[in-house]
Image (cartoon, rainbow, N blue to C red; front, top):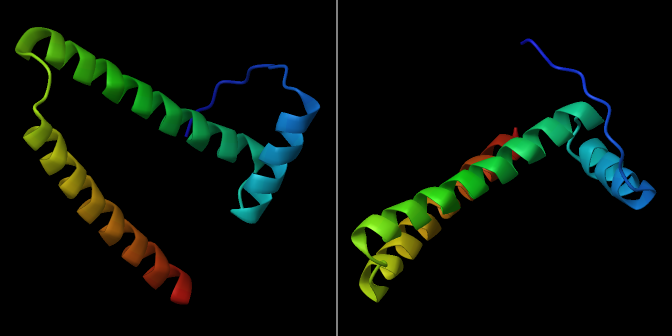
Length: 89
């Protein structure tokens, strides 16, 4: 996979915490930062998409929000079960 190298400045406490998190997950600091930024950017893009949708179609109703939460909770439960299953190997 091609990569782009950048020099960034981080506070010492952030670097220390990120290095611990990366080590705990068996990742290099670069891989952990890449994955974390990708995750954060995905959330941001999703929130922007929701705002655009609501600007065009109106706010989600309480029922629609409840259904979304139900779907999300089911998805998270399946994901957690798969993660546990992988870790049992």
